[in-house]
Image 1 (cartoon, protein in one colour):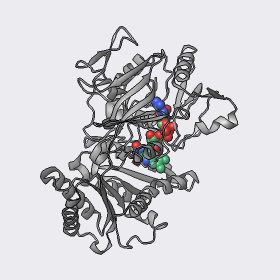
Image 2 (cartoon, protein in one colour):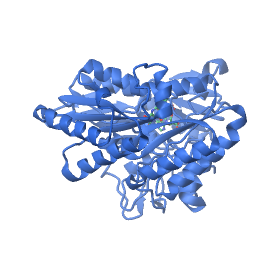
Image 3 (cartoon, helix red, strand yellow):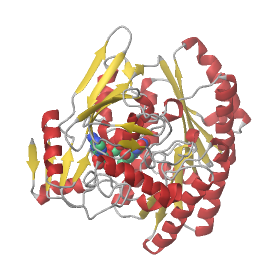
Image 4 (tube, protein in one colour):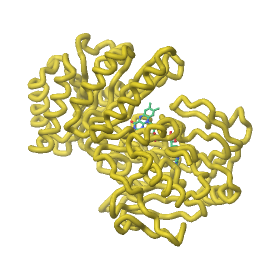
Length: 484
Ligand SMILES: Cc1cc2nc3c(=O)[nH]c(=O)nc-3n(C[C@H](O)[C@H](O)[C@H](O)COP(=O)(O)OP(=O)(O)OC[C@H]3O[C@@H](n4cnc5c(N)ncnc54)[C@H](O)[C@@H]3O)c2cc1C
């Protein structure tokens, strides 16, 4: 086990992308195997020392930022095992393995993990604990939908091996004899029926696996994860379609979804969106974006039956034409090289914004809300109307297939209060439409004050009850999600 105590050295563990600056801890523990990991968790817990779990620090909400006690970093727990037999491939990874690690392990075996959060240095342990998502979530769901098993280290050093069926609630409760002689009762609230990463998962007859995924490290440490992998598609068609009006882009998305739901002719894995200001930001680095484009939609489709390629391209072009897209300026990627270029193009936007934010060019507030399908047009109209009224600079981009946008409010020093007010209004609006305040980044420390908008004080009390069942001393990731 590596133990670091020098403040100058360990201060890098007190940061992520949230902008929270007052992190502090006395020591950082870096276990090199599972035995060391469970031992240190048990010892620290017995000594009443707060433990903050740390991945790569790419989180957006301050989840890994400690305020006291110890940090437990997963950086040396990064073993990857890929087991292949005739029927299936199983990918078992330790918490500290990163998305780029598993991508390279998978590519050697002709398989892929179907969740692709943009930032590939993120660890799998953290992404499981946050229920992270990516652009392919439109087709494949989030981490929650693609995890077969986790090893979960509890406060007393017991490692629970949890699959979907190994630990099922009976109605509202489950007995976990390793933790208590009383049953654990699920949080008694109803979750929004949209892509969601806000608060504890809760449904009748749920699996414990679903509760731990997305619990943001507040219940214990996820030490290893078995992931679902799929055969690599034979080919991927990817393109960016530009539009002169945002409403045409929305129509393009709605029509694509309708085709998928009714006729099953198109089944894209990603539908991503850039609004006019996002395209302006990107054009600082990519001069070929059409000048008069007011919106862009990325369309990504896998091909396993190559004979269907022409049919899919025809449907796509017909849709683009019906929705008045710039037909002579559709960026098509049909070779691996072009695909990678387009991937880098798309992924450069959050990095450009985060870099400017880190250089303190502006104060940034970024929403992460999703709403139901039928509210797509309403929510974008609302954002645009309110932003115009406020006079704030903003960019909007995100996972339009899931009606999930990152509205980045970029405020000057004297505009910060106005931006905060608008941000809260946006969350209230999303919830009023049946949506969520966070679809992928989680709540952490940054967004917990907004959680009552979604679940009310009663819902928060339900979450507190669950937290204390697993962590009666409030030592695990304390300050994340809830104030106790
Ligand atoms: C440019 C950029 C793009 C991004 N794009 C996406 C995106 O598309 N989709 C998305 O979902 N997110 C995205 N993110 C956010 C971020 O990458 C994810 O939240 C990711 O899961 C964080 O991983 P990490 O290893 O950096 O975690 P950290 O920031 O180190 O920690 C995140 C949280 O996980 C907890 N944690 C860490 N390890 C464990 C463990 N083993 N057990 C229990 N809890 C643990 C931490 O305590 C903390 O609460 C993006 C971030 C950046 C900077």
